[in-house]
Each structure stands twice: as C-alpha cells, then as structure tokens.
Length: 510
Image (cartoon, rainbow, N blue to C red):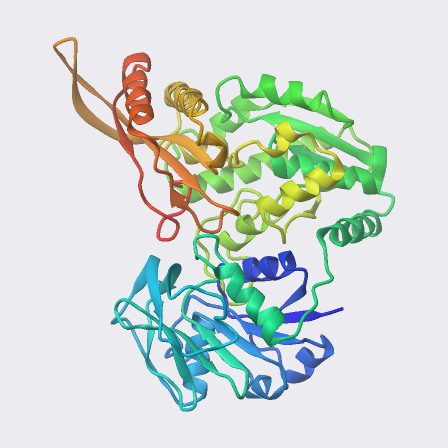
C-alpha cells in the first residue's frame, strides 16, 4: 500500500493534510516532528510532508526535523512552517514578524516550470496563516510563485525533489489546493491511488469490537451527525450492547428535543430520554467565562451519564461523536499544537469518571463523517443537519447564562433559521446562527427609549470546520431577519453581522 508520511510540527491543519491525501486515494500516516529516519523508513513512504506549526523557526525550542529525512530518497513537501524549516536547513533566510499574512491572499506564478504547479493558472487565491516569511531562498532552489507583497509562496529544488508552499493547500479556501497536492502525489511521488473510505469503516468496526470486548456501551446522542454516525457505526460492532441516551441539557434550540426524538424513531437504535436541564442550568448559574462553561458542561454530562449507567448493567464505555476539529482546538493532537478552546467532549471531561471513553470518529472531519454515514445507511435528513456545538447555546449566549436570556436567544435563532431556510443558497451554508451579547444598547421603539441586548448573526461556509469564510447573505434576507428579531423578540433592539473568517476567528464565539 502506498503511504505518505506527514511530520506534524503542531499545525491545526495536520490531520486535514492527511485527510486531503486520503481523499485522493493515497494512504497517509502522521508521525511526530522528531521521528527519526529509521522510524520513518518502517512506514515505507513514497513521499514526506512537513506540516505547518504555531511557532517560529527562529525560536530556540521550535520543532526541528531530523536532517536524514531529506536523504530518504523520496520527495519532500514543506507546508508553511515546513517550508521555512526547509529554507533554514538548506541555507536560506527566514525573517520574523515583518510580513504577516492571514486569510485569503493572491499569488502569481513566476513562469518557472515545475511538475508541482503543472496545469495551474498564472494567478489564484490561497489561504495564508503565517507571521514569518522567507527573505532569501536557499541555494539551488527556484521561486515558482510569490504573493502581491513579493513574499515567496512556492519554491522547489527539482533535482533533490524538495518543494515548499508558504500557504495551506489542504484548506478548502485555497484555490487549486487539491491540484497542488495531486501533482505532488501523482506527478512527483508516482502514486497510483488505491485507498478508500470503505476500508476505514470495515477496519473501525473490527477495532471497536476488539476494544470493547464483551462490555456495554452508553452513547451520548445529541441529534447531530457526529453522535448519530458514531452510534450506528458502534452498533455494527457491538449490537444490542449499545444503549443510547439523549440528554436535554436546557441549552437546546427552540423545540429541538421533540424533533430530535422524532428523528431517532426512524433508526434501529435503543434510545432513552433524560431531562437534565435543571441540573445543567443550576451548575452554570453565575458563570460567564467560556472555558469554565465548557468544563462545567463536560463534567455535568459525565455525572448525568453515570447516573443513567447505574440502570445499565456492565456499562463501562462512554461513546462520543468527537471529531478531529474538536480534538485539535483543545490541543490534544500533535506535540506542539496550541490550545484554542476546550471542547466539552475533550477538554471538558473530568479527570476521574467511571467510564472509559470511546471516540471512533476522533481522527475524522465532518464531511468524512457524512460520507461514512451514507455508507452506513444513516438517513439524509440527519446527514445534512447543520453542525450544532455540544455545549449548545451556552457558547452562543455570551456572558452569564439565565433561562430568560436563553429564551431570548432561542427565539432570535429560530427566526434566523426560518428566514435563511427560504434562501436558495442555504444548502451551501455550513452553519448559521445567532449570538446574544451581554451588551446593552440604546434603541427607540414606539417613540420610547429601549435599553436592550444586541444579537449578532453568524453564517459561514466551510468544508470541514477547520477553516471558514463568512457567507454573503443577500441584503433582503438580512433585512427581514433583523426586523423580525427586533419586532418579535423582547430583549433585543440591535442586530449586527459577523464578517470574520476562520482564521483569525473561530466559528463559534466561545
């Protein structure tokens, strides 16, 4: 089996590189940045990719690659930090902090020919995320492309089959990123492409069966794609030893509990309902810090499931639909990955609990999970459901959470969803929702002064949640949403629109 080794220098996108390579039909394997050549050789790679990373290559404790990696006799592609690392290794110069570039940037080709850029246009947009840049290329390297600010964007040493990209070809917002990776795999590494997602499903079913043994599994169902696919996948491995619980944590959207339970009635899963809303809201009373919210929600979830497990003999496993973006934002993947925010399934879990955690989807992304769900026969209505965070409205109700503020947010969010669902472009929207700010503004209604909270509309397009861009919603829809919220939802007198991409922001506000 063809294999590409990815050396992880701590990038938020390392697993995304692996996934893009798998999508092209080539198996990929992630190893830590300090893996030596002997370890890499055991994987029999046909090529090596060096990932990006959050540190500067000029830092004394920054990740560094074993020099012998460049003598393995296989092509090497450095991405972002990886390109800068390669530059320093071969005598070039990296400048710190003087040409920061984040988000969408345009690059132009220099005219130098290469198998890496074959078939690409002379100019296209890419996704940048770097503070350092290359001030001088290493000897024997050619410049293939640069940004409008003359920052080197693509370089190569064709003789030694060494290549560098300053941008991220793996993210959905880089134009022709797939073609670049495809050129590296097929034109440079000579791959044929013989790996598919169906093999992963079969292997994971066997792995779950072996891991759980004769034990029983309790599943935290949320009504979303991730937990549902995790449950159906696990049921293939353990059968009726899977018990599913849908918990109303008091942080759901308007009438969500009823619709979710109705949807699960069409699946062959054993599902019970637990109303723990009072318990969650009591635990969150007076809490405004987002990290404390997430950890309280994670802790409370576990305690609720421990109580549910008391009536399920032998329940020793807790199944969760945790995905890779949840893991990486919590800093749990890669030796140098930065913590962005804790996910309630990851950073929010208490250290002591009576379950072992089962997370079969933890190395996958949302679109991969949807494909797996289709292979497993999960209904289309569930697979196309927009992502909803595990902590629910707690991360959209900024500041202190109260039943009254949650009800205001629910009504505003329902209006947003109702109006946008009428728009023909809504199918391409990754997520669209309202955020309630703990900020009061002066307004006027019926010739009287109001002093109410502000709501923010957030709508993004994405392929996997790792990067995202804001959606250009038509003005007439924005107008109707804003007018309806202010007219129909007491407690809100101002509506704003979030037009920030990821990066630099995250999709959720907390």
